[in-house]
Length: 150
Image (cartoon, rainbow, N blue to C red):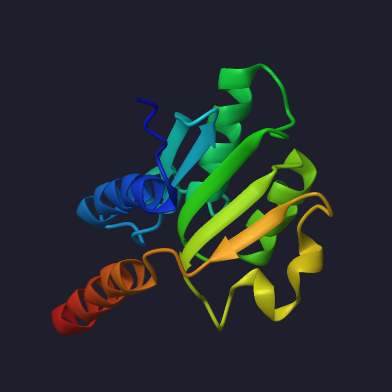
C-alpha cells in the first residue's frame, strides 16, 4: 500500500517549524520544502536570532533545499509555508523556479498576492488556505501575547 502525504500533512510540519519560531520569540512562520513526497528542508523565521531582516522562513528553506539538492533551482519542489509570503520571498521563489507554493494564512498587509500571482515564476502553481484557521490562530496568539506584555 502506497501512502501519499497530502497538503495538510506538510502544512502541519510547517506549523511545527512555526512553533519553534514562537518559542524563540520570532514571528511564528514556518516552512518546509518537499521533493518526491519527502521533506528536504525545514525552516522558521530567524530574523531576530540572526539579526538579519532577510532570514524569513521561506528564504532559509529555499537556501537549505538548494543545498540539499545541489542546485539553485527547485523545479520539482513544493514549498509549504504557514503565512502568505512577502514580496521579497515571492521574488526568491520566482528565481528558484519552485514548482508549487502552498500557504496557510493570508497576509493582507504585506503578502505578495496584493500585487498578483505574477510575482511567482510562470511555471509555479499556487495553493492557499491550507489549514488556514490553524495558521492564522498561531499568528494571532503570538501577537496577542506580545500586546499583553506591553
